[in-house]
Image 1 (cartoon, helix red, strand yellow):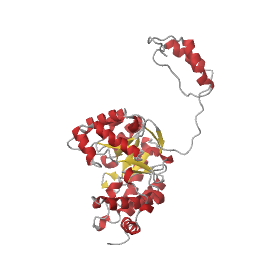
Image 2 (cartoon, rainbow, N blue to C red):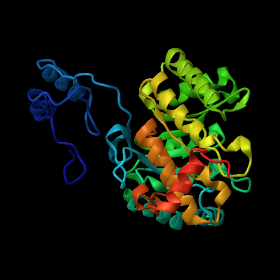
Image 3 (cartoon, helix red, strand yellow):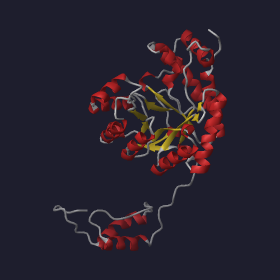
Image 4 (spheres, helix red, strand yellow):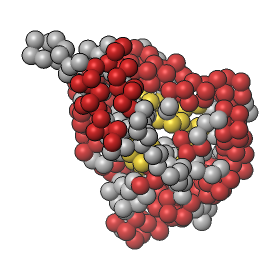
Length: 357
């Protein structure tokens, strides 16, 4: 350590002796120098360390998704404010999820945008989704600036980030400035297998978890069979060819809008829930996510109905099918037993396509 004048008084022997307690107690796997240390200091540390075994690695268990901001987060251990095993990803720092956030980003008011992020954490978001996609905004510059500022705000950066963009270069720019272990949202086979592998390899190098959309070269998966087929194909490529850790894969099988009056949309909720269960069975250790607000987009402007639909859908998707993650407004989440009986019945009829009307 430096003295009061900024100089370094410790001899190599002193520094090696000060580190000895760490070796004796088996606390370290790696050890090295710092500012002020010289080759003789490192040599002395090596000579002392060589007399002791390194820390024993913990026994390997079931793989778990382990994320981090300033604080770590094991996804399998998380329960939301409703008591369900579910990771809340806050949607309010997403230009398409919040008009207020969009206005602030367009005006360059990053300070006020940080207040939105803080409020989400206070309201129960375990992860903050960051999306600055807009045709009138330089997404690359905006993502970098937002992340650079966010990591200096402890109340924001204590949680992991989900870097969310339609262009891979934008999420990659955010990833390079992001501390800890974030989630990248998203990649898919839509770009072709070769580029998909290239992108996944880069994300693996950076140590990020990844959201994989149920898209391929033929388009978006809408039916149960398409969702399962594309996710299984993506899983096989990622795990077998890229060597991507399966516990760091989050599939998004596409939450699509119901209640539109179009017959072909009526079964989208059922398809998602059924596909979720099958994907979890066929792709060990993966997580399942979705943008929940998409489900009720046909009822925009009617908040009570939208919240009720989300409540019913999430209750069944989480507890019966194993959905793990969702981009939500944490503050507005309702438990299914909080719903009025008549609204709950109607919402269940809608989500499960029980009646034509």
